[in-house]
Amino acid sequence: MKLSLIIPVYNVEQYVGRCLQSCLSQSHVKAEDYELVIVNDGTLDNSMAIVGEMTHDCANVSVISQHNQGLSAARNAGLKAAKGEYVWFVDSDDWIAEDCLHSILERLEQTKVDVLQLQYRNVYTDDMPCDEHYATIDGIVSGKSLLVTNCYFTAVPFMIYRRELLLTHQLFFYPGIYHEDNEFKPKVIYLADSCASYDKIAYNYYKGNANSITARLKLKNGTDLFIVMNSLFRFVEEHHVVGKCQRAFYTQIGFAMRIVLRTLKEVSPEDAAILIGMMRDNRHLLKCLCKASNMKVRLGGILMSLNLPLGLKVYKSFF
Image (cartoon, rainbow, N blue to C red; front, side, top):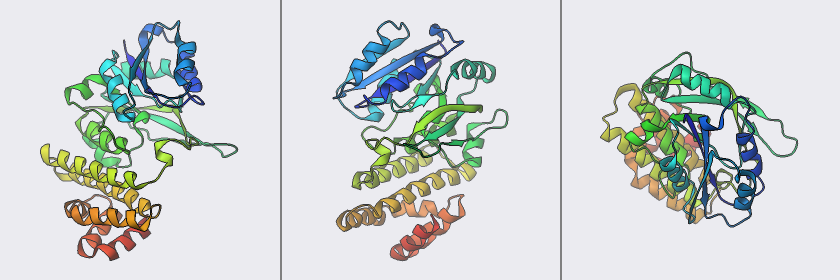
């Protein structure tokens, strides 16, 4: 089997039918070429009844059920159960493009890469126009080259990954945190031997779900980002990442710090004080920013290292 689509399900009864329909109605592709691994993460609504109704006679669909453990644990469970040579993590409030699987499978067979970059469309509610995003790769490049030339990584569903790469390097999602994509993707790309792109829109990213993790800013969003930043910092140390790749990782840490600063505006003064205290306790991360490849991140890191209150004001103005 070539491809496993891993779909976590938790309280998405409004959306899961659209997601499944997009995956099951693909033309010019055989059922034995791909599978859907649906992970019931302890959903409390009618989502799994919809799943059962739509997939009861589909031989290429399997369902895993677990107590609610969060998106990372659900993705990890799906990854461990997947049988495909490649895996595609699809969020259940999103949907894939019409009849894209046939040409994606052809592209995977043609390139045999570790990571395939996809193009995606942001879809908003009501009358807001969609916007399309393209991040094409010229030919086949190493993961390290991609890491250096493109530090602005997008969400996990916008790439397809060789399953063996993830399992060999034990690249699983950090459980129980927000922003798990920020922690996962830089490591995968660094360790990938080869990357290419599928240059058509393949994924519809729904931005209108008010219950989604990315739609909520709270203290945990900020504190979890320190977990993300420290995980990336440890990866750099443990894998002896140097040079341009090291600077690219430090830029990722800088972008995570930018989200912390955004979170400061959304929380209470008491919670903001907690986040600022965490910055003081993690000065090694501020030093990383000083070595980032992005100039704004680098300058912000220098200023915050010298004078945290002043540096915070300047860093906010950069972004």
